[in-house]
Amino acid sequence: KAGVTQTPRYLIKTRGQQVTLSCSPISGHRSVSWYQQTPGQGLQFLFEYFSETQRNKGNFPGRFSGRQFSNSRSEMNVSTLELGDSALYLCASSYGGTGNEQYFGPGTRLTVT
Amino acid sequence: AQTVTQSQPEMSVQEAETVTLSCTYDTSESDYYLFWYKQPPSRQMILVIRQEAYKQQNATENRFSVNFQKAAKSFSLKISDSQLGDAAMYFCAYSGTSYGKLTFGQGTILTVHP
Image (cartoon, rainbow over all chains, first blue to last red; front, side):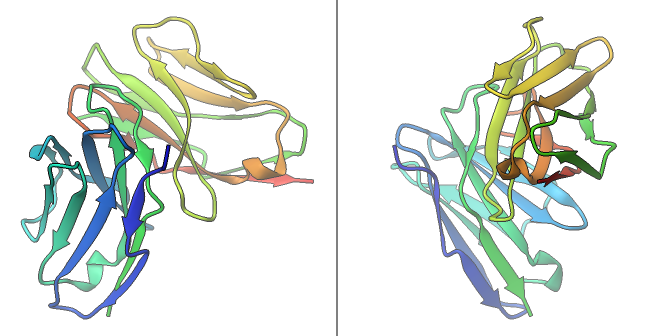
């Protein structure tokens, strides 16, 4: 089975711009979770989608949004980028049940200048 | 809210030796799951092992095993016969009733010396 894929792998954006990141889950997985990883804050949960519905959301401002398509692929959007949004963004897929193992993609490294 | 604490920012071990990484957590939930993930320099997060809280038996995956002490809310990872490829950042993570959410510890950097 192919693993979780994320595109693009690297991005450089300017403050004020917006960005869209994509995540394709493992075949058969219906849940996609997104995380932000920074040296200062560590790994923080952004949100989770299951069957095109957001089931859970972390403590991030409304500039961070996402969606999921019928094929379970998910996108994450960040509007009005700030310097503090520079981070590694990881997505993970699972079958969606409580406690199911999450399998991570390679991440998208976003740099905001 | 659940919290996960890894008190060892860095650990080192000689190749072929055994090392134990510590993790404690805090929760009021009765049903939950605990994980260890490994993040090598490539930054790819790799699942190492999973423990179900309702199971008393400690999980084992080849050279990796856990010591799960539910009453103490402790979940340590033991790596036996350490290999150079084990060098990475190791994260302890908690999953409870909150859908799709893993709560991570701060991580422990493991160095393996040849």
